[in-house]
Image (cartoon, one colour):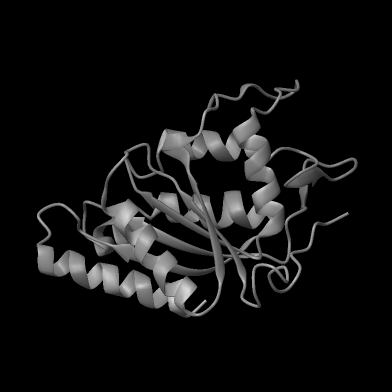
Amino acid sequence: MTEMAKSGATPLEGDGKRILLVLGTPKTDSLCHALAEAYSQGARSQGHVIRQLKLAELVFDPVLHDGYDQSQPLEPDLLDAQRLIHWAEHLVVVYPVWWGGFPALLKGFFDRVFQPGFAFKYREHTSLLDPLLSGRTADLLVTLDQPAWHFRWIQGAPAHRQMMRSTLGACGIKTRRLAEFAPVRFSSEEQRQKWLRRAEQLGSRV
């Protein structure tokens, strides 16, 4: 049965949306951290309830050693992550693009957490998948060192397609907004402050 996101936070949390922010960088301090905090502030200003998963602080093996052919027990942090994903109506994933994709830690997180029976199920007698996380939406906040136009038109934006279609989309999570912050390298403090204001505005318009 598809796990639909229920509308509204619990009575103790308030009337806003339930938002899970996944900070998908292995760094302990970066522009992604600042963007995540700005988005969170914007969301909270509108009464939404936001919880965060900082992958750099979680304890888990990011390697899916046998694919899904054999069971690989989830660590406590990943079990908590699954509970938060079920709790959330809206996901926010904040991450950098490295070598055209997203960091290995974030890829490993999805490999381990988005398991059969949780995020999808195999369709009987075919190789196709049926999503189990339908009813949820997502915002993506992505940093790049190269210009956004170069990533899109020269490289084909592989990280965007993988995240929106092959990962979130395959599990029923519909990407609502993709915000690029680029190029980060050589960006000025003034430019970064503009990006933080933009992230805060995105959070306030969930």
